[in-house]
Image 1 (cartoon, rainbow, N blue to C red):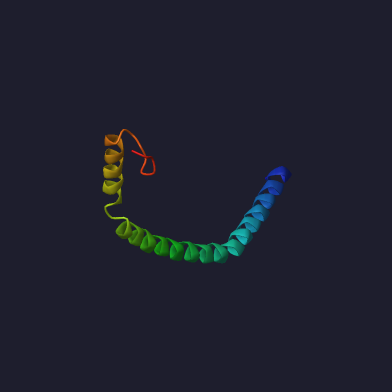
Image 2 (tube, rainbow, N blue to C red):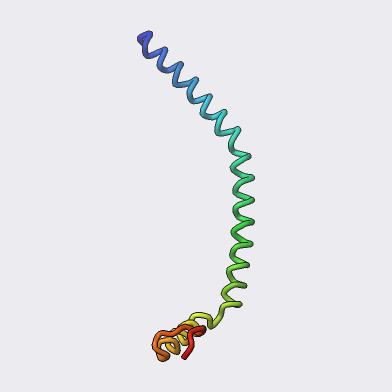
Amino acid sequence: MSKTKELLRSHLADLTQKIEAKRAASAPLRAQRDIVVNEAREKEQALNAQIREAEAGLSELCNEQGAVAKALGGRSMSSPA
C-alpha cells in the first residue's frame, strides 16, 4: 500500500471518530428536543380541538352575515340605512 493511501485511511479513521463523537454528544440533546416537541404537539392538538369546538358554526354565521350585508347593498353593520 502506498504512503498516500495509508495517510488517507488514517485521516478517514480520524474523521470517522470525530463524527461519531459529535453525534454521541448531540444524541441526548436531540432526544430532549424530541420530548419537548412531542409534548408541545400534544398540547397543540388539544387546543386545536377546543378551538374547533368553540368555533363550531362560525363559518356558516360569517356566510350568513355576508349574505345579509350584500342584501343591504354592501353596507356594514355600522353604516346608516
